[in-house]
Image (cartoon, rainbow over all chains, first blue to last red; front, side):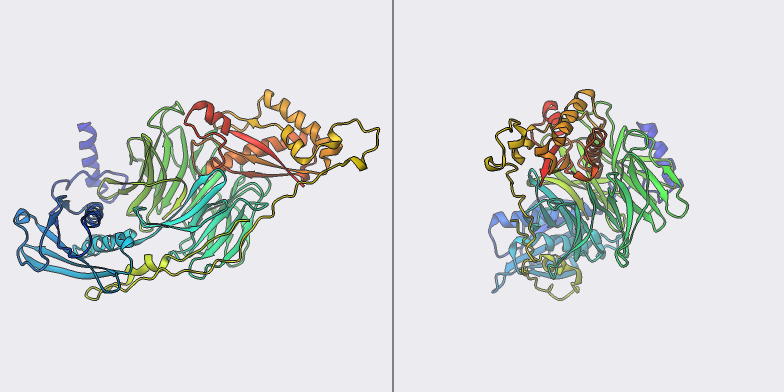
Length: 416
Length: 184
């Protein structure tokens, strides 16, 4: 093990910016931070809930050693609590309810008893408090001058199966602690954000005569039919300008990958293989990665759209049935055990088209639905282990995984 | 009748994107948006193929009196091995019987929808494609048995239509299947 680590250390100096190489330095060198609660409204249960959410968000930043003690302070006290006097930073906040029953939070960051940063937040409803917590963490990260964690403010859209052939589409925050069901009734699956602004999405309807792709404008509530196919229809990826979709369709009973121009409404077949081709993802405008059964089992391949050249991307894992791409990086789900039904079945791995390294991102359980954040800084995924489900966040540059317990329902598909 | 309720949560979720550093964050509203034109799927009417008054006394064929539901109940479920979509000899025999039934006068007027399903292992697009390949394999076998391809449509439900939800091998094997659904 030591040898591997030293080897990785050595290599990390050579390829300093390669995310497939684990970062193992700066583990203990991050500054400490404590959080002081100076709330004047709300009961203890809610105060503790908010505190826990904020601690979790600060942890996910990965730039602090976060103290987990819930301590009560006065907001206007100049000095930090005596227990926190050795902390590099103290974040003090005050929650209070105003006349409109809105939740207000005042925040200040103290460094050596000096206020170095402050900001106020307000939401109309108490039950969406987690968005304030995410915003505080985002702002503190900006203040510290670290690379952006804008993905903390992005929404996750997912479908869950509630009964056979019955599903819901839900919009959530990145920890899935806030969940709003946006589409109820029917059999609607594979939701996919239609644009960067996340104000529209695509999804597949299965209880029509043919599987049909639909488009929903969230603000107006308008639903449009996009395209139908016998057998199967999935929107696997949307180009960064929102104009091109990568679809899996089966116009002749054969699941293949198609591109679809949302302006001209024309589609073009990109793969022609008698087995299975699915899950296409843009790497660049002219290159996609996808999952194919060309070798007799699912594996990751890439295809150049200009030259039609197909290349096998992964030489590890017995069954690599899902992937997500960002630039040169591909995260994929691999079944490692030769016994399909043993424990420890599916793990996530990261590869780069520029190097030959494989970085294992998870160690235990069934890990699925990996999705890169828009900036490639983080990966979201679902972990199932010992009957428990959790949503996971992988911070690639910090070599850290964070898990948030997932309430109920089996996730069918997810987009970030 | 299924209705879709759409309501907007974006406003609430987008609130923080525009916070300026000293001012209180903008208030958020969760706004109810009117439901879109209700999306509905017509329930397929069950049609009686043959009634007494249309049958001459010579009719002794039981199939002539079978309704769509009765025919459907006689159609098999085709099972598959893990991660496979090839048809075993045992299942081929069942498909042959189904094809014979499909050619009878009673069943001739119906179309069939083949529904491909998978077990819970691999809840991805790949699983849906696997379900589809299973349906497609059954379709090809039916066509080889003389059923007109235009009578057959297909859909894959991936792992989202299980008949058994226990986490056992027996249960998973029951879910790796293709169902026959008759359409008028």
